[in-house]
Image (cartoon, rainbow, N blue to C red; front, side, top):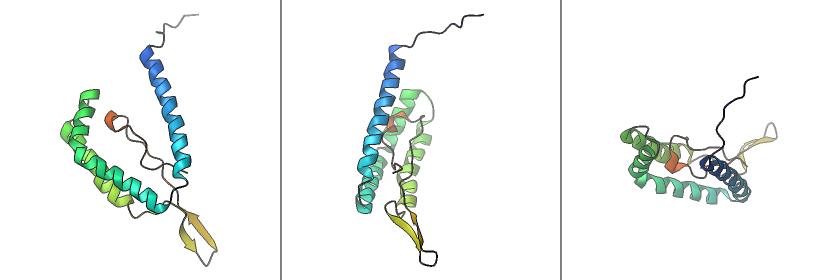
Length: 135
């Protein structure tokens, strides 16, 4: 039986695991808070997030390339602008609180919910709380 050579976990690995656990706990706490907010409050948060990222698209792109060593700054700028402008414009009219579709003939309704989302892992400077959290 061969013994598998495996390096012990480094402090960096353990720190990463601890950070992931802490982030997950913070997300659970934020989810319960967001679940109580009104549509207007959620819209305000989403608008503020989009407005905050747009002017910093290039700086965030440069940070991502510097931190990871991957990618092209100009491409990441476009990705950041797409996320903070076009995706925002697409989701802006969506209802995410309460009943979004009511049918009087079937006496039913479809509940709106926040969508789960996380920024791509290839973009470390924008690894922040998700835009929407499923409640």
